[in-house]
Length: 181
Image 1 (cartoon, rainbow, N blue to C red):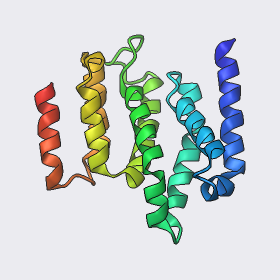
Image 2: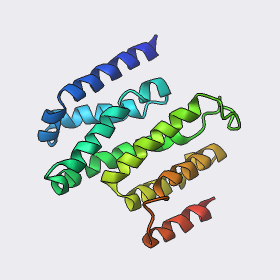
Image 3: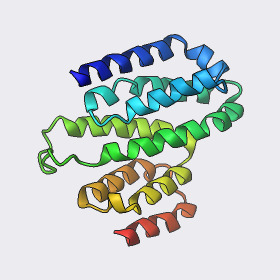
Image 4: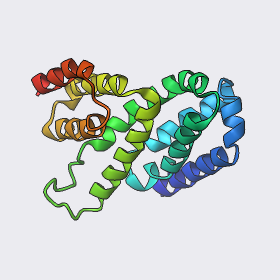
C-alpha cells in the first residue's frame, strides 16, 4: 500500500538524518543536505498523522542544537529560511479534516495536533514569533483557506504564537487576522 511505502521512506530519511545530524549541521549549505532537509519538510507536512509525526523529534533536536551551540547567531541566520518553509508547511496540519467531528475531543487526531503545536513552539524559537505570525496571516488570507475549519486551524495555531511570545509590535498582525475573519 502507498502509505506503507511513504511511511518506510519517511523513517529511512528521518533515521538517516538523525545518524548524520552533526554532519548535516556542519554542511548545512551543501545542496545534498538541503535536499534532505527539503524531503524531511515534505514528510513532516504529509497529511497522514502517522507519517508526519515521524520526523517531529528530528526537528525538535535540531532546534535544541541550534539554540545551545556557541555559534547560535550564525546557525539561526542559516536556518531561518528552512524553518520558514517548515512553518508554512505545518499550517495546513492544523486544519480539522472533513472526516473528523470537530466536537469529538476523544478523536486521536486532536492529540496529534497538540504534538504539532509543540513542534511549532520549537520552530518559533528559530523563526521568531513575528515572522511566524505574518506567515499565519498570509496563509489565512489565501482563498483556499477561507473555510471554517481552516480559519479555526489558524486561530488554534495563533495560540502557539501568542501566549509567551507576543509583543506590542504583534498587535497589528492580530487585528489583521481578526479582520480577515
